[in-house]
Length: 126
Image 1 (cartoon, rainbow, N blue to C red):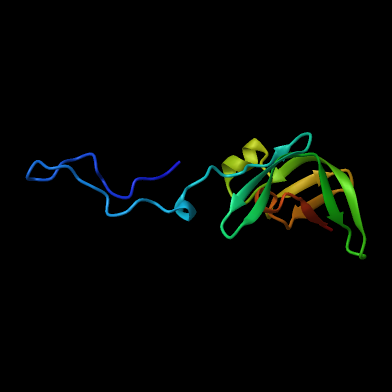
Image 2 (spheres, rainbow, N blue to C red):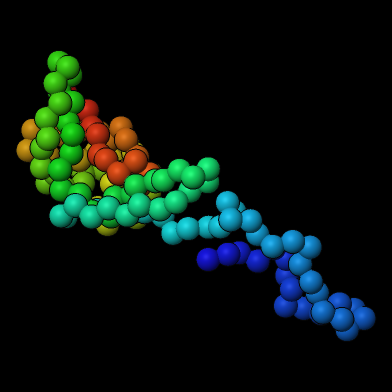
């Protein structure tokens, strides 16, 4: 999915065609955002710049919950309570960094980026 560089649909005043000065580079390509929702775990791995890979979560049903006393528990996500990133994300139940989740242990805040790291880490709210 590449964006056009210039408006090439119109012709020049002289009647000639318009040609782009250059094409978009690979690193300039727009992608659809990875919107993580609750459900059985599904991941997608994609190649990015510099021979690196990004693992994105499509769906996830567990969260790595830090309770504060140097212990981490794997707990089930019940629902997404708040998402200050976007009101539409909150309505659709999409998990992003900073989202408030309801888990079996209580309310927690997501501190990782599930669309880029492929994992959901959270801290327990008091």
